Image 1 (tube, helix red, strand yellow):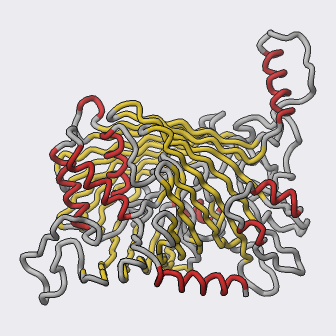
Image 2 (cartoon, helix red, strand yellow):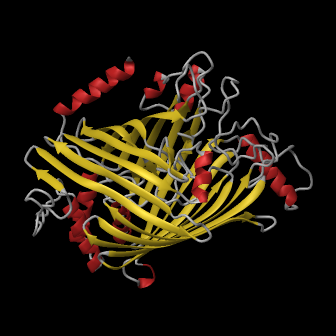
Image 3 (cartoon, one colour):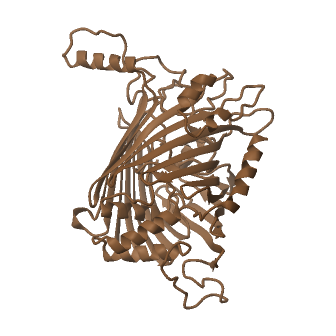
Length: 584
């Protein structure tokens, strides 16, 4: 009952509120354009905090217009891309809209960027088709892999007070074996998607649905309510909150004032499909997140992250949301201890420092659990091994309770003086048992409060107990052509003979070899290298022809034995869609 009252209040509020914008979609190339502009400026955008994604369209347009007129080091291609970006966002841009030379039936494609657009004083509407038709030929595999997506994208604004967005798509696909293995870990769900059913010979059929409304309570406080994904950080990966998992229902409150941005995120997740109760297919779980980002200086951004995962119905009672967690300005660990809830709390930190124009460094720190006495044991053991101390003062080292992760990265624009060449690289280190939790009620089911949704990680796509190098490069030789490369190389310590060594985030961390001697990359070490080269040509606004080559190698680290090999060449047509990438 409380949930429906809350939703009713939120739906009634917009009619009293100031102007509001929708957001750039997850994975949009416009996010990379904003990143490049910040690097070229050597300072962060005053309109938004780039660690909190997705970005608001109105804020992105404001920064783009400012950069277009004030930055002296933009290339000719930068100005062309900014012009196209502003044309795609006419509801906020001061730039006059281009008209099509040959509209279809006078109303369709009257503007090159939209199938249908209406822009009046009190109402804006943009409607576009969505299509992704791509085929991959894998060496040694007879059948083609493919993705066939057809859908529609709608965004709009009413009375400049309520923004709305909807994305609906029907999909059929046949994926390569490394994606199907990932689906098995997800209990059948496609990475980034939800429930699937079999289709054809080895294929799957699934439906994608995203949508939300957005509105402002005051000039500084905004609300977003709907079904979508979120991302925290400045990197290729996020150790805190990524957009890898399936969409989820959420309420988000954004509070901005000059140099800080405070975000509250209340999410309704699903524990798919193992846990069930009273005949219901999926047991609900909840995630509540605080993020506070500071603009310390024009070129240094620092953010703090806090999350609590709530879940774990027993065999008799369904557990709902604990309403203590709706307090928007309190430390969650204090609530958890106060009310006796056995929930999972994660804290972390984001940072990015733009050293100079075209060069920036960034990072993340994630902590699930941290004990000072355990650190003393680790330091004590290290000193003895280095010969700086003769005897141990403490027993044990490498406690399972030291659950933390670290990210350090570097990003550049126009690197080596080559115009329109951007490179980004990072290192990700995640200790064993990070993101895992325990079976609260001893039901024998997997832990409900693991850091997951729909059997998919909410942070790093492959779990924990890993060390990874990630690299991405983008080069535009001309306005409509983008060449890109991606390289991911990681080593992961996986389970052996059913023993939990800390890589699988869905397992119970109490099922471990012991309390101490839980070393980094323990277990069966497997190394994976994945590389991709791709080219995308835009032959009309939003319409792309894509080509790519992907190679993936997986082998035993100790013996060098090859486990899986994939070599694929692909070709595709894409219309108003973000290309589907499987980087794991």
